[in-house]
Length: 452
Image (cartoon, rainbow, N blue to C red):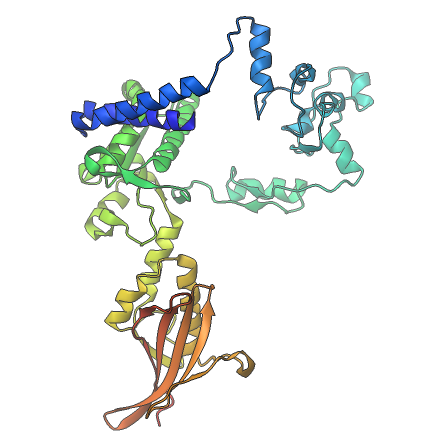
């Protein structure tokens, strides 16, 4: 079933690309053939019952469902015979539900776990009768459990309010236990952790996860526009035509409101050269493990994208990719990490090129941390050292340090002559922990304070 759905989606994308000139008809035939084959196999393996009675159809759907969404009161209908037992129930807004209302889903057959989500410090269920209100008839089950000392987990990060707005309620109602999350301000970087770059129109890149997030942001802005009737212009910028096309498809429904004060424009960076909008959303697209940011590595193009917003600039991208680019900045002779170090650090061209092979941000950060400690004079405790003595005239003594279980950092201290001075030189290399392959040919860490 899933393969058939994916095949139909691929066919739809291909037809759309052909319609806008991004694909050729020769690509269509194999996709259609594959889709028909999957649908034929599906029809043979998947039998659909011939039900006409609404009640029978409802029971069939419920008996085969893994997730059921309903109100607390309508969950009474889930007690029907023949339904699979429910092991877990989640009650949302449980603080606004009377205790007797919570009892309905809690009586489901086979129930083993119950999760109540709500805030007992906000409004309870509405009770019109003064007598019932005085008798705590509207008291929720979650409030009763909290009063009895039952442990609860506080979701202590809030994203809705500006810090100045949340200051008073946080102090008076939550004992200052609520933390401030990142909210969209005039400038925000929105991390798209699970984005994936792929080929789009004319083999130009696109990132459908970022496109979906852009669509959601625009939808929320449109809702605010309908509520406030305040005019707003939104610009969506991406360096790739494939992403511009993908986002354009998702937000084209708002074009009918452009004359009414809600305007959405989706263009490439070059297309926005002389334009400006109230809100700019940048979809960077790139999400990879090699640190490549593509077109945005061009400073002029990045400058155009970053200077189109009047009031708000929101950038969508991969935080892991940004970390990798920051590592490139740190791996230079003038890096702030090594300015006050006891040993001066020189990065050779060979090291710069070969360190690019290690594209795991966490491993690279651990390597940098170790280099910073080594350049400051730190050495492993004697009992932790694993020395290797090499034969030869220099009789170099190597030490190894394992990083993240994936490679060894190997270094040695030698003496070289430079003009009239003898200098201590530390040479560093990285070796594959499994195959012994060498990642980095050389990095020299030279002691300038301990000349011999």
